[in-house]
Image (cartoon, rainbow, N blue to C red):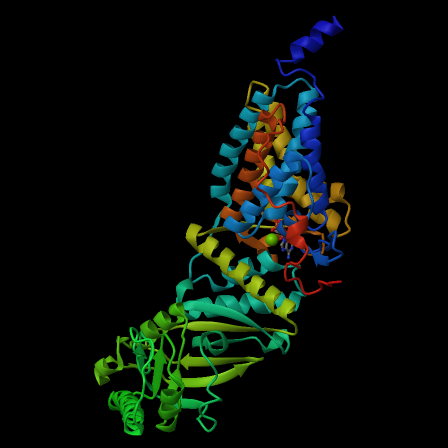
Length: 541
Ligand code: ADP
Ligand code: MG
């Protein structure tokens, strides 16, 4: 009789252990990143075979660099990296949820639920979650200054000390605000030297002269550092004497001929400089090189030469200042020059920059600073991440409470929904609900609190209608909107849907077959050996 009952419970999937290794690999990965989740997450130290040590608490970074043998583990890693690239946040959450869903699936299969039923149940859970998320969404738009700041802060908490992350979030959102949230008008670059606190916003364009142009020092030692109300001429070509291209060599017989040639060159250069002067320009920006002699003549005439300007920067200067680039200096005209309030050469660290401020078109640049190149890079990444989440939040126009609050709310919804489902998917919806609760449980555990007590308290308050109560930065249950813990709805939604998809994909696999083709994925080791991920505490051997 007992035998019959067990067969009835088994709707075809069998009580098998064969697929268990698949789930084990993924849950092992989830366990590896679990402790890094949230503001109290700990860092992981990664050591590659070459002995390079990287300290990081970025889930994507860990997964990207860790050596993974199991095919399922690689699948999870690929999905996590995709999440990091596409969304810029929510990676650890996605991996932790995937691990929980696979664990739940293993339990369900032990109870005799067929993988297909589980996959169906996961799809049903996705539908319910998406619908309910719409109801928890709080609106944001470009006027929600405070809310957007909170979103940026939440995305980067734990990456540095609280004061610094707060400051970078504020710096980023203020800069975005100054350009009406048009991210195309905000640039950011990081420079080593000086502390984080020296980072600043410039209301204009910053052109890196070290990479785009040779230093002016060599040609014009006495050139002024700044020009007020400059006229800016631009030329989309090389400036100099065009070399004869088809003549291999010229034989100069007589001394007069050599003189004549030299005179001709001098005249040509004088004409080039005269053309710039006549246009009334104070600055000449060339996309290609300016020959040395012309450069020193321009400088002597009080005109700032800027050569080899990177294409994107060249175009940006043209747009911002309203200057119309010409193809040759002869075509210059006062009508074609652009304006700005000031043009200034400013050394930033070891880099020489050209700062163009007060342009017709509003522009902003963030000059980020960090003591070492690693710190500078990490600061740049923090700002990049702030920009990405703000863009996400504005695109969708919606944010939700973080700290596991929305996860608990959805878990409650799924449990409620489960009660009206007649078939076995009921079990699956309940299992997804428990998996979602892993977010607050993990956050509480990472903060040193008892996960079960915290979860019990959260459930109680959610039952009482407080659906934005989550795990506060101190690990205590708190109202997340008051705490300012907000994340874009689309980020949380993507993490959950990705986890459901991934778990479903693993469930559909019943065997792994090795093929002859080589794996196109980086193994992790070769990736990490020279790349410290830019992390400030990276120590190389
Ligand atoms: P992920 O890679 O998933 O973004 P994180 O380590 O960034 O992982 O942790 C994100 C989780 O931490 C989210 O659930 C988020 O709401 C939560 N969180 C972020 N900042 C805070 C905070 N100050 N207090 C409580 N929870 C926070
Ligand atoms: Mg994050």
